[in-house]
Image 1 (cartoon, rainbow, N blue to C red):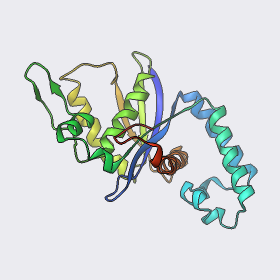
Image 2 (cartoon, helix red, strand yellow):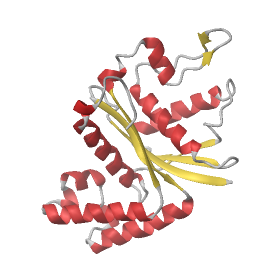
Image 3 (cartoon, rainbow, N blue to C red):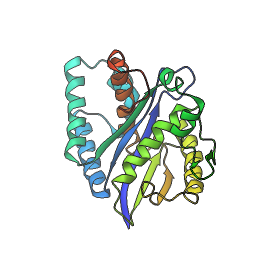
Length: 232
């Protein structure tokens, strides 16, 4: 039985980043079809060809959006936001301040990034990825999506094959399949891994807006956060 489709992207997994984010949207197939129709309609009403749409250019008002005034830019973003809100797809986002992540001990970071603990032997059965905060936020996104997937259904995850997230995701999905043979958890129902190029007419460009927007919002609230890693 087909359950949900989730499109995820990342921001801040490169060396030297202050904030690491994984973000995207998930929903049923019908919801994604509604979004596709409303998204195309919004682009057409502002004279933006689908083939020329690039979220990075939209954020910076470059490319097809060069010369747009503040009012037009805001109205277009609002139109895209309404298309998302009216389609009944759901956002998912987790972020962590990289410096705060590394304040945790090695054992804590291993646990946060997916290491399997054997309570009987009182030892880890795997290492996790203690030097990659991205695995923590990615894991939390997976848990959120799969927790909303009906029993017996599948959550299909999509990533741009030309994005850094694709390589991380392939590695992590292999690890999760191995881990499921050690411990059983309904948090990780059957998960498929699929990829699509981010330059195609897919939701990946929409996801990029979310990832960048979350990184900006996460950074703006830095002074309000307590020390320590946390989800956004």
